[in-house]
Amino acid sequence: MDIKELLLDFRITSRCSFGCDLCFRNPGIEEQSLDAIKEVIIKMASIGFRRMGFTGGEPTNRDDYLDMIAYAKNLGFLTYLSTVGHKFIGHLDKLELILDWVGLPIDGIDSETNAAIRSLGMAQQHKTIERIFVYLSQNPTRIKIKLTTVVSCANINHLPEIVAYVNKLPYTYNVWRFYQFCPLGVGKEKRDKLEVSTEQFISKMEELKKRHPNCNLSGATFEERDKANVVMEPNFDIIIPDGEYYSYLCNLKKDQGDVVISSIMQREDILKKCAANRYWVS
Figure 1 (cartoon, rainbow, N blue to C red):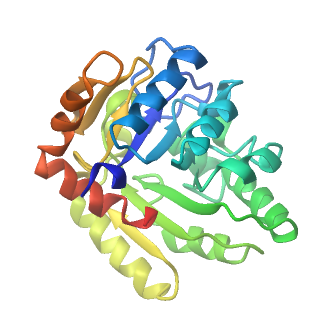
Figure 2 (cartoon, one colour; figure 1 turned 135 degrees about the vertical axis):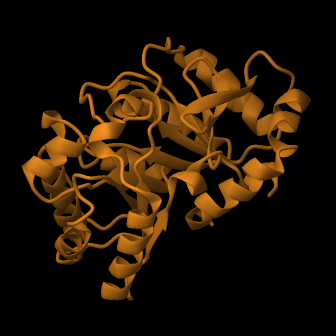
């Protein structure tokens, strides 16, 4: 994997008002100004990065998130936004010009399941997905859609119903990724409530793909996701998930470009796993 093929996930904020039990963010990290972020995006481009994800927290909590994506796109980046989607329709006209991929979560098709795996504030998330897909059926977009489902005790026996629900909607997705619940960040406190075994996860994914052979569904275990994405925190620290914690690699603002590159590119374990986890980008 070359550095230009690596999708760097930038947590532009650690703020989120939903309080999801499965969340793997590190809360409370101070946000940076738009000007500081633009400087870091320029540095990313100068040392070879060409793929950038915007995530959080909930990235749309920042009023300037569109400015960040536009700035990266104007510098030639492939852009990806991971969001709950509540502002997607309202901002679609602007996103259409600057965004390549959007990632949207759907973990259940009833309020009880959604509240159990996420929070009461996300209880109607399946309706958010439905509204987006209905809107896009009348207003198609060039933006590619990646659906995500975190598989936990709350929904592991309902995966076929979730897929059937989405497949009946009048628009479609490009890829759907199912992730075994990972006890990382905030979510680590909820492992007793949400954790499923790897054997359970693999078995349910095999069953799901047999039921829906024509759908672009794929899964990743906790082990397959470990060290499988490179994350930049709001303070520009670059970290990777490492077991139940995160390991520090470097700081993109403070460190020289060659230090940033070597901290990532010399780790064959990271590169191999990132390529497998983010196959859909290509």
